Image (tube, rainbow, N blue to C red; front, top):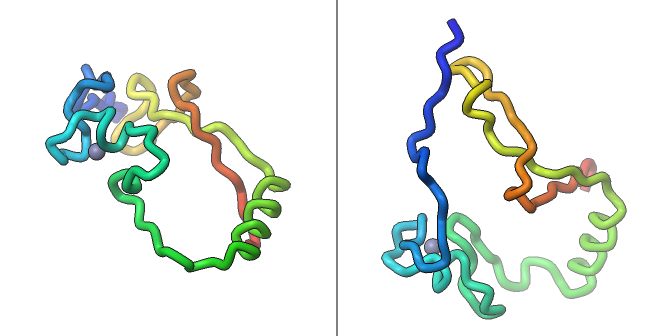
Length: 103
Ligand SMILES: [Zn+2]
């Protein structure tokens, strides 16, 4: 049975002055949407200082830059069902993933 999946937040459009989606109580522009280079990491991201040396970090970046990359998609709510999640391209999604393979 192909039951369309309904969005829990069909009107989800986050503006810079809206409350942040991470429930911090701050505005999006001052929280996860901040462009301050010293901002804390976005919700759900953990940073482990000095996990890699500067040289190891440079090596990972150099290797990652040579790998295949592709644009991330969004869930197509009109074509998705409970048993099958359909994806589609969306110009608002500006993130690419890198296939790190053996790295
Ligand atoms: Zn936030």
